[in-house]
Length: 114
Image 1: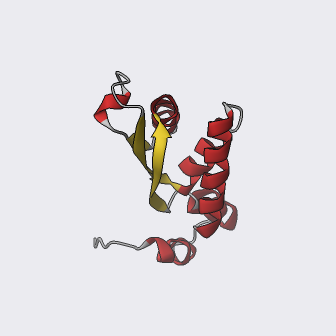
Image 2: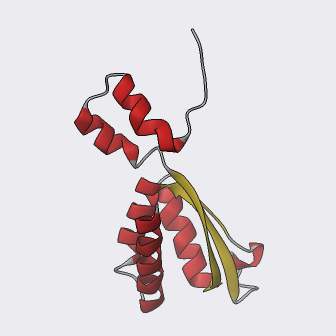
């Protein structure tokens, strides 16, 4: 038995080499790409919503400690997750308030860069 790290840019190739079904590769590929995105000056309520929604998808969001008790008005937000989780987050943020829709659009634009 041998173990090695595979970088995300090689994930598809390595799955193909391993004989993974093409349909399975398509489904799993978005789960193999992990990114960290920073949003600046997000209102505390929206930062808390982002955190809750991303946690529900299995990702993570780091916010200023004052967001929880609203002792800060705004926070930078660091979102951590897979491409699939970011896609889910954008989808969940669309029906929210206008600020959330703008964040959803920004996330969708960032996803395109992935």
